[in-house]
Length: 116
Image 1 (cartoon, rainbow, N blue to C red):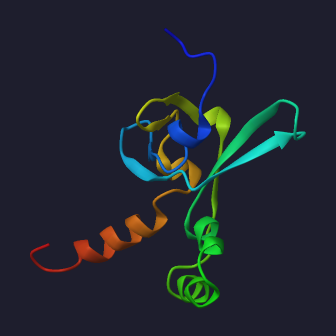
Image 2: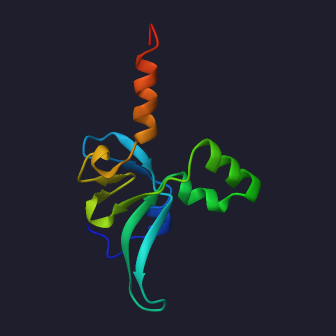
């Protein structure tokens, strides 16, 4: 049975994002919405990346995260969401949306290590 509504707080925020190949490619850090308060709101995008959650940190930690990791924010249009279950499943691959850039860089460096 299909639910009449989606509980964004419990069913979307902080859930794992999987691309079309079922590869983990991030966590839902925030949602972009449009509409008027008190009227119907519509989700337009998922926001993920250190730039989203660093604003929630105390100032010294936010500065450190920005220097060490960067303030990257990736915007995933809501139209790219295939299904919402215990994970958020996308219609496309992570690379098409610019997700997992850091993971791909790390994998490239690790592959150069002998015996890795």
